[in-house]
Length: 166
Image (cartoon, rainbow, N blue to C red; front, side):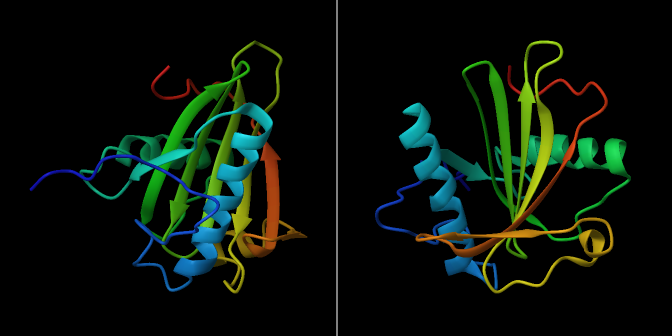
């Protein structure tokens, strides 16, 4: 059976492609489209995701994010990964994983020593805060035309974690 290829996220016509198993698929698709619009507008970058389930081309990215979360905060995301992407823009590696529960995790990792390095969590509109994050992070709200209400939080990365596919 052929492995589905990466697809560029269209933020003008929001699609749930690749996110269908999520109980909040339309909201998660809006969150993904919001990220795509940001990178297209600010950096001229086409945001393309690939399947991150077992055997999918994005599984290695989801695995790298999982190992970083475990090493930095002893944190394990219980929900299955659906899609992932990684790319470098202006000296910063960005890796995103979109999970079935509606969670998006992004890793901003500056490639120069001493540059910004952080993990961000964004919750799709309508989803509950995952139990593994509930007592450990406070979430701020922001509004988005594409994603409704986004709740987000982050932490600063302390250790060294070589980003994938550099």
